Image 1 (cartoon, rainbow, N blue to C red):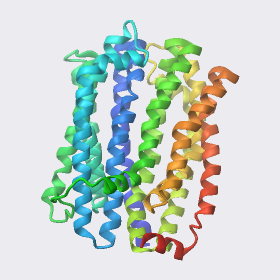
Image 2: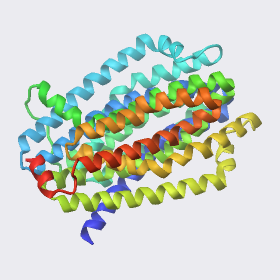
Image 3: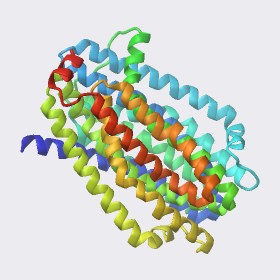
Image 4: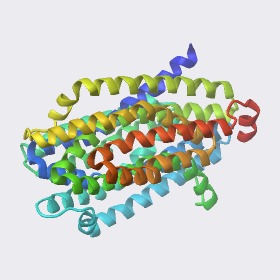
Length: 442
């Protein structure tokens, strides 16, 4: 019973926190659609892929560092664990500053490359530049939240995400309506979200339960490589979403023009909410898996994995059935101009796309288990296929065969293939062997 309560405490806090992050982008979509119409929605959808890169890097260093930290803490290697945190912090700050400079000097060439033109170009440029300038805060927020969750405080990690999102909703309205700042208002409100989150995270430093600290350490390439290895699968999942968004935009633009891109923006943002729930489950179990692995407790690893699969399956079924019944109402929320073409395209796309959530939970949980227990090569292969090579190849082929329907069908097709691969990797990893897991951990 104690294990079960502990499990649901972690995943529920993580799900709520990830939903808070997803609501940040969803709020932008709603207010931009209402205030700036189809052009604003298209501009937002062309530039929103930047979150895949920024959040991916934050997750790479946050999840990767926190996983490594938890394993070391479970083995009572405290100094080395603190060294991992310090290294992850320096890397996060440095990469964030580089992205900030890129935003200041190269935002316009980037949005031109993404396909922005005409009335969409200036809006896309403003949004891209503003978000990139705040990249250090986005990355550091992921870092702090991951470490705080692994340091036994999932509640504060959740609050950091939720309070940041609530701030974003309020500021979105203030900046875009009373102040009438347009697309900049939406971008600036979003950019201030991680700042609020970091301030909430600093509370952990004032508590006696805080166990991770800065320490004198040299940046060691081998340790950086190992740190990043633990987070690489999560990075690929997040970063590839931006690449996929870009490719989908190009293909949909070819088949259905700006209306199609706007429709995909609506579908992608609704999918983002569901993805946040599944990500919350997988990130919620990560500290539990890492600690159990560090202690060599195979039975607990299996317990966590089985419960994670059950929760993910229930979520997938509920989401799919809800979409079948409420797709028109879901699309209408963002179709403020009541554009019938957008409504038709988005409704059909939503129903096909959301079939994928029947399979995605198992894929996320299996990848999380491999990542948290040092079967890094398996998690990388699954993530790389699902989020990059597989989806790109399948969407290009399917769009050629079946046009716009092929674009939507590619998502569930890739999830099914990934599930088959995950089953195979689980079998060859001999995960049922207690001896194998303990020896691998030592």
